[in-house]
Length: 397
Image 1 (cartoon, rainbow, N blue to C red):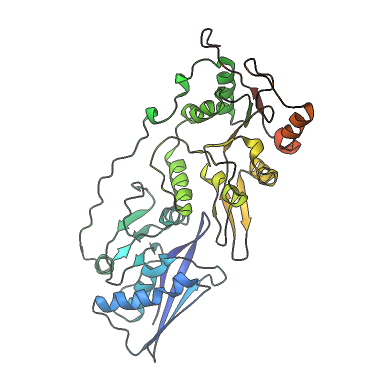
Image 2: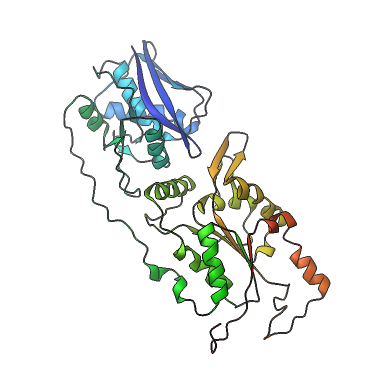
């Protein structure tokens, strides 16, 4: 018998439908997985055999072929363990039911038959919603926000027996989703824009930048408040919608970084020694970089003139498109990268050109070479250029 079970595959942030086709024959004990599986998917056969045997099922005397369709897409990760195990049971007539096409399954298997969460489940859930699935079986992950969609029913399962019971119409083990309190970031854990004294004109310009999503370049001597102004900038951005929050959490989950379920837009502040791959994203199996983690938020480049010029020029295309496409031998992935860039730099190598409190020791040529570290095309992409000076606390201006 040939069984078909629906699952979700990921290509970066984009999800696509995967049809898990299982066919069993009488023959040598073996399981073969085809459809461009990676090493993690190939190892699924060992987990499936161990889980089925621990629950009392047997695959002795059976040759099992599992096809992950579409066959031309590279499949990665242990997310297909659960749908493959269900397909094997249906193919062996251990489950005398028909699996609806609008029901999807994602999750990894433990050797004892337990279903455990895996990385990338939230993007897979959002993809299942876009693909029109009506029911999705998946393990509960306390790191994810509470998911509640009108068009998609999410059924949390903890064991393979629990899935079988629900598919057969039995209640199975009751799984109560823990009531997770939403994590809100208190404003006192960040620099509040209202707490900044002085810089009236600068603050007005930043308010315009927040309203129009303009990129800002701030130039000024050390200690004048450039970093403080940038760190307070997210506090005047509008709160993120639920859809935006899920998108941000998905990107952080794909990158292996936790992100609280907060309405505060992301703020990323990479050091100037960061590599181009960490800023843009990439690797053998491309992961989101800093520009994607700052999606719908703020990317702050302090001492931007100290960043390698090649790394800075990589930002020019994301500025225009709001996304980044990473091409590697194994895959070509596209991640969103729509952010507000705030950059800060000194006016010269010593930092005190034009300062009222210190003498500048740089020659005109040194100052020009320092300013030329930022290319003309990149400088033109900054909509607002600000000159920041020290605040006279007596006058507060």
